[in-house]
Image 1 (cartoon, rainbow, N blue to C red):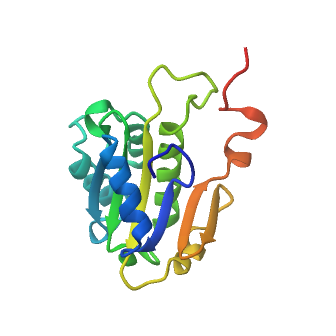
Image 2: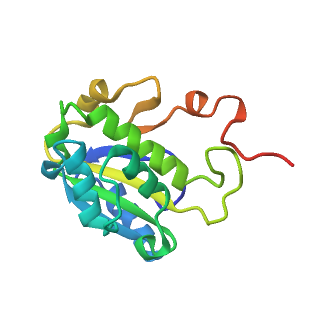
Length: 185
């Protein structure tokens, strides 16, 4: 989580040492760790509200999925410490079976992919530095693999890696034939 590398979203047990070590490494490098409670993420509007309150989005925030993606892509140094963020979702068990879960994961992956990329969606090198951005969903009792069916989508790569469920954009779908990858001059 202290690097701009996939996966962007990770589900796992709240006591996982890897989560604690990696969020501590990002914090030590100057990054920020924000927290929200899954019980506050009941639908798209609630997700936007919880993220806005946790991170301190401006009043001009659009309060919809597209605005969330745009804001995740365009986080400034004040919010990221110039390094990056990890958004920790506590009590993520509450999201199992949520109607908006697949869309929520897709939007997080799109925002994080853009923030973690050296190029914009058109393949042009970005003017601003890469911002590390990851989302960690801490589970209390539910096993991570129980979320697989609710997240699987052709746009996403969803896999089990040990006790963790990882989610990222499928770049063969999102960036076919080099679209959105660095242009060679």
